[in-house]
Length: 142
Image (cartoon, rainbow, N blue to C red; front, top):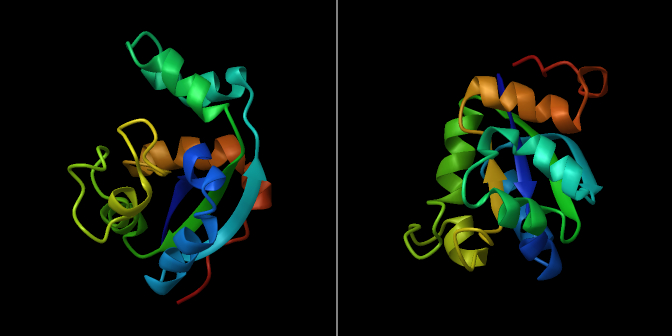
């Protein structure tokens, strides 16, 4: 079993796409282990995206991610990182394949509806940021 973090970003929450995105997650066989609606402060967003500090888009990204509520999810399934990233699609919704979440719900590179960890190490950091280890139940036995 593998775990990853998924975020439904402020743009998708504001447009009422949370239910549709969660339905797609569950239909694809990804298990939601934890879920929480949160509102990041600018400082919280800066801490989460610290890896991008100093990049030209950092300020606009942290402004956007603190602009409204987000839904954070701890997902679990075999190969969940790759599967979630495939479901999300390319970062730029205009370049994302048909049927992907970003193509369907995203508007731009920044307002692209969803976020997902890109590697096991990133997933570990990101999951711990929102769901400290004692809060996540042990993986289900197959």
